[in-house]
Length: 170
Ligand SMILES: [Zn+2]
Image (cartoon, rainbow, N blue to C red; front, side, top):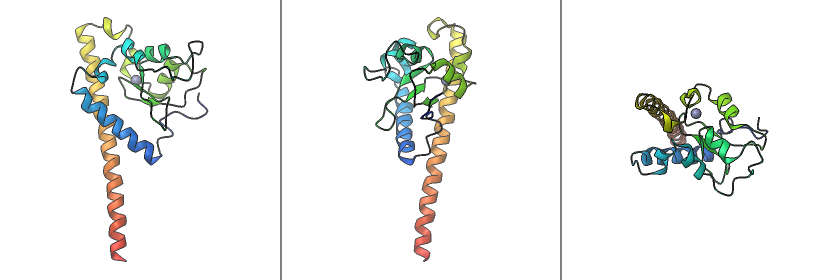
């Protein structure tokens, strides 16, 4: 387990949250175009390509690009979290990785209900029916994440408006 804590627990920071929202909104709008990277992330070889040579640990580490890609993750680096990764299926984002982390184990620990984790074969080997089931789950997760982010954004705006109104009443 990471000493720095995974992305889930450190997302209270407002700047990071905002950046995260932008990332997801971009991901959602990009998804509409099937030629973009977001759509390709269903396949491990494309997830692997998302890891730049700047990934902090080498192949000797259990936490290397290949094992991250095999565990469903692709790289979404930012200034605040250069090692941030997102699962293509449940959209769980984790950062604060350490060389001895085992990506699949971390995935199960932080998002045990992810449909990708219950697959018994690679996405490229799924039948059409299995693929559609996975894709439905993925879309549901994406909408759910987007909904929660939109709600958070609305609450932030409400709090801001309330503060401004209180100032006017003084
Ligand atoms: Zn997942």
